[in-house]
Image (cartoon, rainbow, N blue to C red; front, side, top):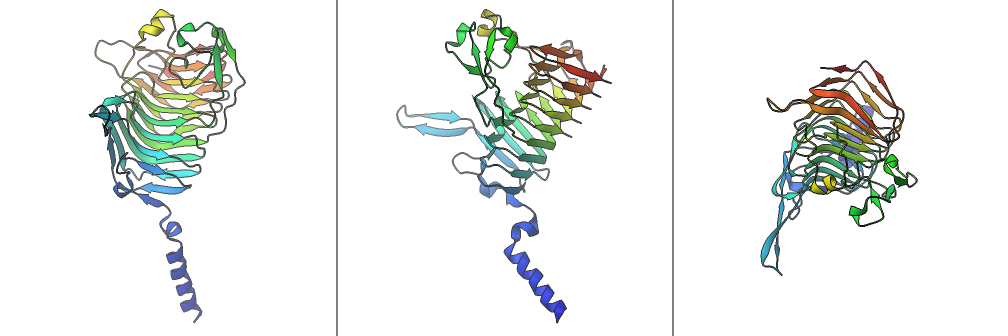
Length: 325
């Protein structure tokens, strides 16, 4: 009698707790937005991708001009905190031939995000694999001599300002980075522009392959980042300075890994590779540190670069057991 009772209790629990029984909320093609194509996650929880997710640029008809307009799309948009996504090796593909800013995963001002076991392929101008829109935009740099901006403020997410150091004559506003706690684990990410761009504190990239056609695979802003046990590949060794940057003598300080305000950062046990053409020579630097103190760089293998790192602004680091080939 007791055995039968226990059996029916277990059956009842399985029926009322489907998420626990399956261990994830399943997402697939049926969950893609009909207009904007991608999947939007708006509640905390453990999710898993069960099918290939594909998006292209979004075409909309403009009734005023009687023409079609194109907008970028995102394969997965995360609009809630405390979200874990297991891709289960299913790829998410985001491709565009006519618009900028195509994205694989966008984390919109959230924290505690965990992405694992998947592939992202993001194609297009300024395409980024994973991007985090910061929890706070109050870390502002006030340029007194950068007149071309035609404004009195600029933050590190702006491409015109991301390479400016506090030692370049800029006023330093109090840093107000918040804790994002984003983890990217066992992911294979390819993007034409940048693989991963994250802001705020305590972000981790590990056990992953990040590959880009451009010259910066990873750009992290904020304190205590960890980048470990990854393969990082870039295919460009050019800085591609814009006319504005040339005119005002702004030096682009890119590396395959680029950190700013990265106090206490760790870059450990990565293989960092430049794969260019037959006669393209070497890329300048594997790691760029900007206004980053107390960074540990150890056990990395660097291939196809002139040197391991470049330090800019108010920066300090410890280097151990790195190899340059």
